[in-house]
Amino acid sequence: MRSPLPVVFILAAAALFLGACQPTADEIPDRARAHFERANAAYEAKDYAGAIQGFQAIVDVYSYTRLYPISLYRLAYSKLRVGRYAEAESDFAVFLKRFPQHDLAEDAHVLYARALSSQGNYFEAAYTLGKIAANPENRLAGTALDSFMAVSYTHLRAHETVLDLVCRLLL
Image (cartoon, rainbow, N blue to C red; front, side, top):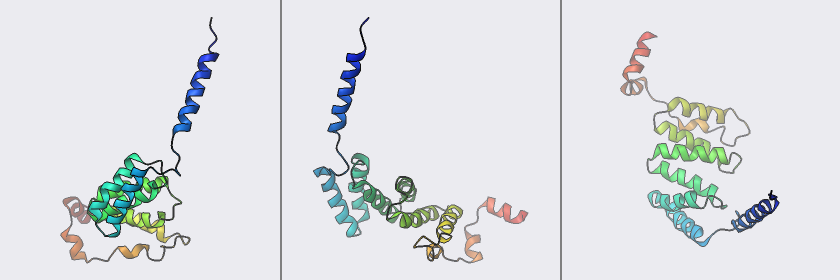
């Protein structure tokens, strides 16, 4: 019977070779840099619809680069600004899960809550903002709940669903 040692050796050498060929996070391909520069120029000009395409390309193709976190954050923010709330919520959730200690994480929590609120998920948004407000270490703790404005009872009744009406009447 033949020894499996040569096969194992060849596979290990191939794995090392392929691993050495993978780009590192410090290496930014020219195409990724070009996407980022175009998207960032649109973002800075407040052309959020134009920024989405470039940031999306980085998020989809160049997630191994150091451009990924800022691109993901700006992609989510751009989607929020153009009214694509469900996508913004999803992107902010990914950002917060992958980069909980990032410099933009505190802002991302507030914007995540705004995306939730814009979709009518007020309780989840209030819960998210309440967690921020309860954390004295968070620089946004004092202002987290400011994004929720008080509304009148009449305003709430105008948006009441049949289920809300039944629950209110049962109380």
